[in-house]
Length: 273
Image 1 (cartoon, rainbow, N blue to C red):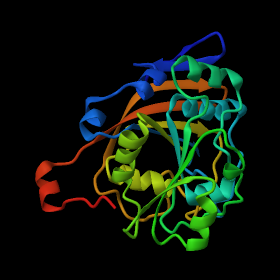
Image 2 (image 1 turned 45 degrees about the vertical axis):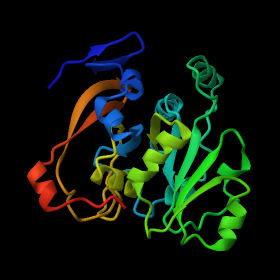
Image 3 (image 1 turned 90 degrees about the vertical axis):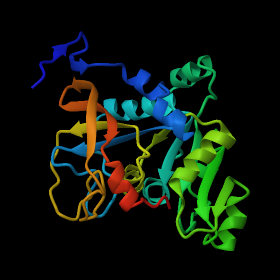
Image 4 (image 1 turned 120 degrees about the vertical axis):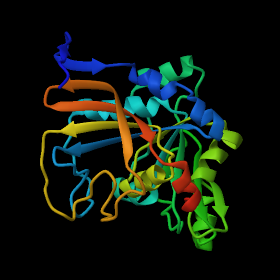
């Protein structure tokens, strides 16, 4: 077990690199794939639950964790969220703190990150809070399964990227964000289904994980990778790059390393959509 040094603010930390540098860094891998660097941020209980069995919003983390989420969001050019999570939490995906916006401007970024929504069916309510603010552009990646009435309502508030497929091709989505919108870093804020799908396609580069001092229990409460009883296609190795302990919460950052044998990939090529 690593030893931890306590700083003046009472936080214990173990680190091999700065978290912000990890998110902002441009790895050879993401350059080669022509897609943005993707960092996901989640909070979970000690027993691995990210919400209750009803998927209802649960405020089980501290103010420090909420600030942590905003800081991760502020580092990115775009913030990504799945439709189910957006509908459940009804968030604007903004940056309440002026200092975070000012820091972004100094870095040459816009005050707020572009907001990106993913939905296979596209039945998105245009009355959600995210559509009631024009702080930054909204891009919706969906399919032509999106009902016409929803297309008409949403085109007034967002840019629609609709494909002919049954499901959004997440790899293609990220390439579009990179090539068309010049997005180099993406902050993924869930939910677990979107995270798992990105993970299965080798599209997550970093995981920022807060461990909160609670236990929920229950087989029907989702974990980080959702409710699926299926194993991931292959194990995913997480390399710890940062750790902080503040009061009873532990803030971890992992660089994701995918271990897949090339021969296995040739026998069982992965789908991308």
